[in-house]
Length: 295
Image (tube, rainbow, N blue to C red):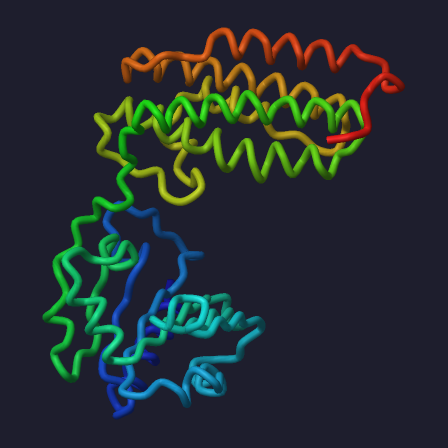
């Protein structure tokens, strides 16, 4: 993307001629050989200062690289006093995430025994006036590789997933679509289905693969049939569609969960699934007047 490349060069030129800035480093997907990159990929730029106060508490300097149409600022208190963030979307559609470090804090992070995940997934030093980047270890790119779950973790995710399906059933019976969506999308999909799918894909690839954040590469690594099944877990606002999606969740969790249990040598909660499925069916067929209004 030409606009992104030009903006990065602007930042490099500015930093090179600014004595306050001692180091510039590019991180994240653009320097990670395992990450997908396209025209929407952000610039993740780390700036190291002798004193970053003037840049942390004033964002006017970000306008040097174009007109901002949106910005989010987070000060260092969000990160245990390690760094601050200014995430800027420019009118040329390039988004730059600026991470600001005090020089001493950066050196402290660089001298740790293992690289922080943000650096282990890849980095490229663009400017280093004081040679402090020599303290950085070489990225392993392993921190984003999907790991084999312990039996305890596997059991917990499966147990919690079936348990939380019961909340969705009650919400749908009460015509409470907001809470139902919270449970299916914020909890079941994010906390349970995503890791189950990740483990399944990793088990098919010798536990040496990444699917990127939040399932971005699921479609690439799943069979068309399995992808179709997973698509049926998505629904709109219609209550009947949400019931169908809930049972689709159950079917996907069963198929992937039982496959994984065999591959991993872990037990699968067959009785729990049977009991919860019966509960879901019972609630779906229960007249609304008989549904409790509590938790």
